[in-house]
Length: 405
Image 1 (cartoon, helix red, strand yellow):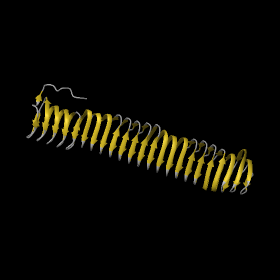
Image 2 (cartoon, helix red, strand yellow):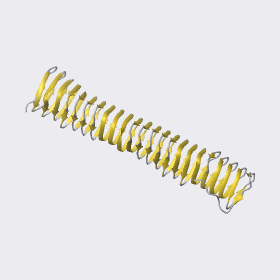
Image 3 (tube, one colour):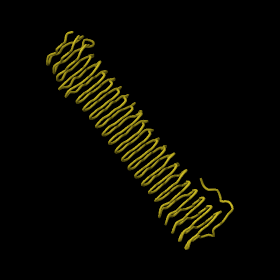
Image 4 (cartoon, helix red, strand yellow):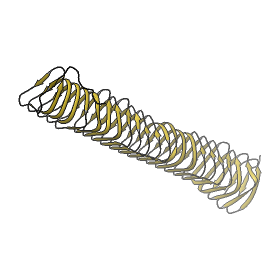
């Protein structure tokens, strides 16, 4: 086995090398077809390779190595205080680059670790990708995991896990298990994922579907969003339809289409749904607005309920001095002190002191002192405390008229 040495600043044509190839800085290697090195290629300083290079291992230090062709490494690629640029295809088992790795063609590796920047113009297939700074890829990436300390810009993804400390922008694709981003996440095209956690801001420009979604600040979805659970610390805005199990919002939440939940909805501030809202239970601290709302369990609203077609639930509770615009239909409807409502329908309707209602239709009705009601229709009991005003005589009937919804 014979090694080959290329002196500093020289230009050498290389074909087959039985041993190792050692290249000093400012040298140029011109491949004769394919430069095939049976052993290790070691580069010190900046080196240019014109043509295709194949070797068992590749190492460089203190400079930039530019492969103007394909690079195929059977085992490991490592740079120490250096950069590597490959214009053509790239294949290796393990890759460890200190500063910058630039890939012009398709790349296939098992693991790649870059301390600074990883830039790719084509596709990348890998098991694990770890980048300390910025990672950008123009083609599709297929990998088990991608980790980056800074920012990531990817076109089409097929991943198990994506973890980034700063910002992520992807075209679309699938992240099967987990997305975790410290700052900002955005996607342009349809994307599916497992669990999703973003510390700051998230935007889905295409259809999005996931499992547990957690956003610390603001979430915006320009089309439909599907989920198992959705938790937003600040505000959420979904232009299309939203469907899932549970939703918890700290501030304001708006849905441009339908909101269909099989579980609970909790909103600290305001929720607005342009079309129908369905859920098992609802708790809103401020205002609830929807075309119509159908709830299998209970509804608690501290501020205002505003619907066109009405709100129906097993139990409806309005907080003190709250207001309901649109029909309320429940098994049990309770208005706390000073609350106001329009038409109220239920099995049992209870109004605390100083409440107002336009019309009450129920089996059993209880009105505490100083309430005002324009019309009452009932079949069972009517209890009125002192100071209650009913503007037309209460009507006791054998059968209640049909309820809305």
